[in-house]
Length: 255
Image 1 (spheres, rainbow, N blue to C red):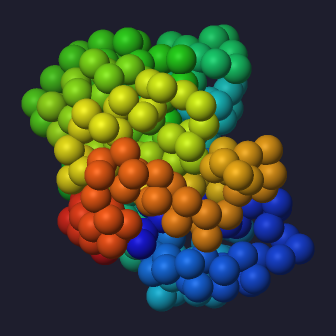
Image 2 (tube, one colour; image 1 turned 180 degrees about the vertical axis):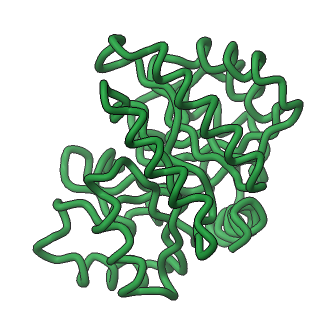
């Protein structure tokens, strides 16, 4: 299985990172993708990917909640990394819009997202989109960009069935994580109504642990719980969920 979105470089894993990685491998995880957040996490992310080159691939992007007064210098660093001659990133992310915590920098978030979407297009890389309380705004922004079809994933998808279909029609995959195991009818409906080929597995570790680990630290090994839930909702085997989602991730991110 491919965990298409996890933060194993996060300080939450400082006490037992090696063991958490081992548990993921034992659970059947073959690759883990590390999204960028901002300059405060770059060194940790790079160090982890260097330490385990066969297990990790990296993305690079400026997270919407990291868009503040200093966003231009942060964006400059991202540009430098993405366009470096020895760049080794499989996607631009995680980028997007977040109106859940704070709307102060909404216009700047839009500007930063458009800029990074254009870079991804220039580099022919997929995007990893973080969208929170902002699906309508995101679809409006994508209409303005007018790229036609898109290449990427809506990470930790949390929209409606209608929004899910709209995203898939535009070319996006949907990242399905621990939320699908919560008592949330919408996510179950989304998974049931979208083709398996359009779904990707992710944990977002250390966040959003699936039931029965909800409220605890999440880790990549728990992706098996997510795969089991998707298999039940789709009426297919876990092996098929693994095979189809891994193939989709491999093609999308060029793994």
